Image 1 (cartoon, rainbow, N blue to C red):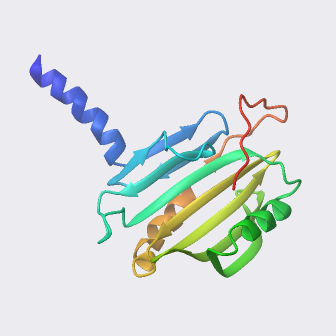
Image 2: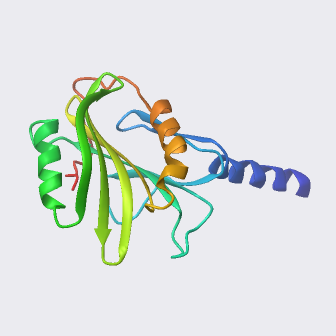
Length: 181
């Protein structure tokens, strides 16, 4: 009986520490999280944030060395381009954009952006993929300290390569609408 209890607990823990596939039922996307990373499927503080994942290792500042976050909301800005411009303007004091390109991601219009975000004494390198899926915007953020970003880049690239969307029906109704910032 005790052995069975521990087996159940171990299997639950391994789902969140080993390779894990997060599927968002509302926005119909799947994120495969790198092996050995922890997953938070209920991140606090920002309602549009759907999932965040980070390695178990922490940096000198006590925070995770890297992070992958996915936010999703109904698009209110009219277009992907307008949404991105609004975001860049809103964060102009914190974002130093290294490059940005208009592209497609999994056949959907996208904006691929590499930037440095400066908040106080902390600087973070972030690759943000802004994706318009019908009337929704999905923002996938892969971040780390500037010193460690290249080390985590292959894992970020793999997470983006494995990211997938199920077709969202054209008349999807959302219980709540959030505006991404």
